[in-house]
Image (cartoon, rainbow, N blue to C red; front, side):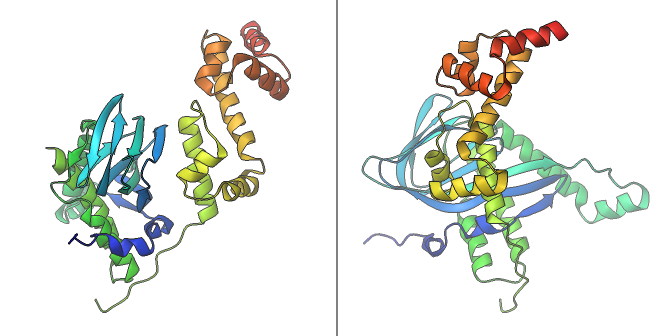
Length: 318
């Protein structure tokens, strides 16, 4: 008889924590939670190569598959985890015959450059453990940056913290914000370790989901504009329909998804033309355009001059 799925309670609302505008201070860092959810990849699913500007933690509570990290393929099975830090390109695949579940934590660390209190105020803060927390957070972020880009077994049961956080939200527990915060910090610490009530609290503020999804889409485009991107592919990443995503771009940016993507690519083309001596063919390839001829056409339509003329004009003025 098979064991019940440990994270079954989360199946009722697997992306519930994504809807919370979760951000908190830990030591001298601000931590912004972009994603904290359970998802399932049907057998044969492929999430093609991409990367993020932030840290993304992947945990496999059931099923199997593989991940390609920095060109090396690693098998994945139940009980494993891996971390993709900023800029680390990765591709995920579910097994051909078996679905793979994943718990995903996607966080951004923001260094808070505030002056440390001095004198009596400084001593008071340190007596309440602030200095310890600053040191621990600093050490954690440093070690996360140094972890090898290979999967490991979840020896310290980091993934169980997802259910703790989820149930705190579901039951509207007293102290739910602190429980979720502590759960996320525990995920960070336990991931490193894998390698070396009756009262109700206030409802947490919900984020504007359209604005939130727009920001996620914009960041994903900025991170991956040089790759082949489609409306359908980005919508799938956000777990919404392509029609929804197109509507979000119209409402938030007053342009279509394809127009926005083209603008981002052209912005990078302009920078390459002015700052490098790369050929138009190389710039087109690097910026996600199908060919230099197509880039030439799009660029002239947008800027009124050809790419070479744009580059030469800047040199003349320089």
